[in-house]
Image 1 (cartoon, rainbow, N blue to C red):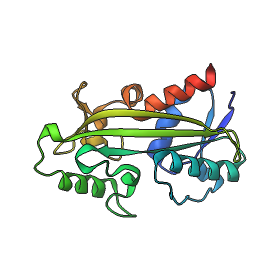
Image 2: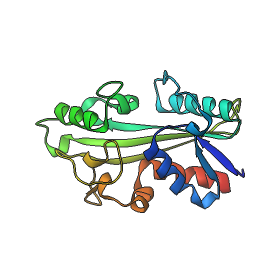
Image 3: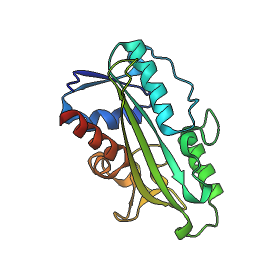
Image 4: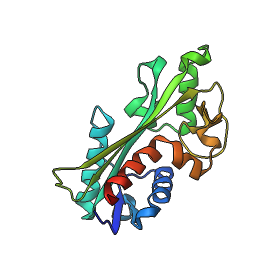
Length: 198
């Protein structure tokens, strides 16, 4: 499938920067949905895939372009999967990254390292058009651990608290290229690019 132009169904500047960087091998122009005044979709789904599909359909409908919906979040073992699909609004609808990180640290306070396991999960849904009956769905999972204090200046969201144990670095300590290689979004995008080019 050749995509000259693709609308990203997200207003998140961090996601747009990451996705545009990772999609460079496709020679596809990636445009934010804000360029088309796509309204924010109410995320009424109960799963990442449902919410990614809702976002992609609305962006494709308004822009008349293929659309890529991304729904991703942090799944913490000790919190039975929370914050999950509510990652961006864990501490409330208007919560900042700092608010969400503070609440996460509060909920995990006193837990030893071995009980602080977590995963970043990403679901990408690509629609050729708004009524596409066969969306392309890919996922990625990045396993790690939640630290007791933030480290690093890169990235966004929960990145400063999320430790990749093998690398010994948080997501916020990795360069964009390093993060693209190992992250949940990087894994999902690699599958997407593979599906589009093979």
